[in-house]
Length: 290
Image 1: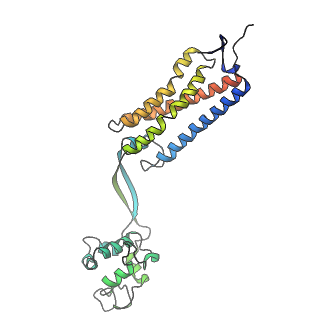
Image 2 (image 1 turned 180 degrees about the vertical axis):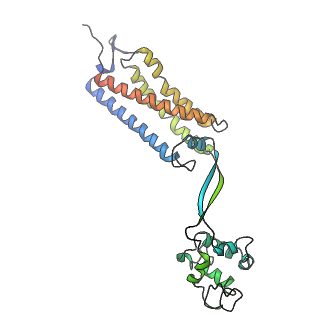
Image 3 (image 1 turned 180 degrees about the horizontal axis):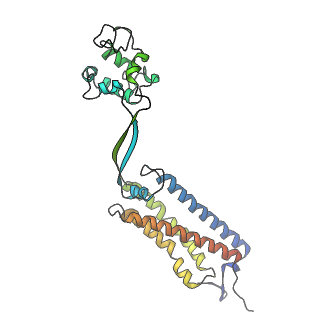
C-alpha cells in the first residue's frame, strides 16, 4: 500500500519536513507511552502472587485467581503467650477480664510485647485497657511475692504496679528462634467492576494509536507481503488480549493467551514504530517523472 498524490504514488519519505517532525513527535509519544504502560503493569501486578518477580502466576492471580502456598518464618511464642492462648494454663484467669482483656493482652504478646506499648491505653480496642492494666487486674494477684505464682513475679507486690522488666522475662519471644509457618492463601481475581473499568479505559485508547501507527506502517516502502503479515498483528493482539481478560475468569488456559498477546503486541508495535521512523527519515522517496 502506498499513498497517491496527484495520481502519483508517494511514500513517507516524500512528506515535507514539518510533517516528518510532527509524525516523529507522535511516534516518540506513543513509543514512550507504551514503555510506561509496560512499567505500570510490572509495578502494579508483579506481587499479585505474593512473589516480587513478574511471572505468569501474576497474570493468573489477576485474571483467574489462584491458591498460593506461602511459607514464612515466625518467632516462637513467648511463655506468657502459650499460657494465655486457648488451652493454656492461665487462659481461664485472663478470661475473667472479658473479651477486651483477652484481645488486648494476646495482641500485645503476638506483636512482640514491646515496652513502648506496655502502658498504651486502647492498644488493641479503642477505649480499652493497656496491656499493663490487664496484667494489673488479672495477673499480679498471683504473679507477685506472696501469691500462688510468686516464683514468676510481674510486680513487686500483689498491690503494686506491674513492672515491664519483670513481665518481659515471660512476655518476650525467644531471641533468634523461629518456626516455619505454611498456609494456603486464596487470591481472588480482579472484581468485575474493576475489570469493566480497565476494559473501558483500554478498549477506547489502544486501538486508536495502534490504528494510526499501523496506517503509517502501510505507507512505508516495505514489501507488501511484510505489510500484510505485520500490519494487522498489533490490532489482532489487542483484540485477543482484552477478550482473554474476561475469558480467563472461567477458563484458566486463556491466561497464556494474555501473556502471548501482550508479547506479540509489544514486538510488532515496536517494529512498526521503528519502521515508520526509518521510512520517514532514511527511506527512499517515490520516483517522480515530469
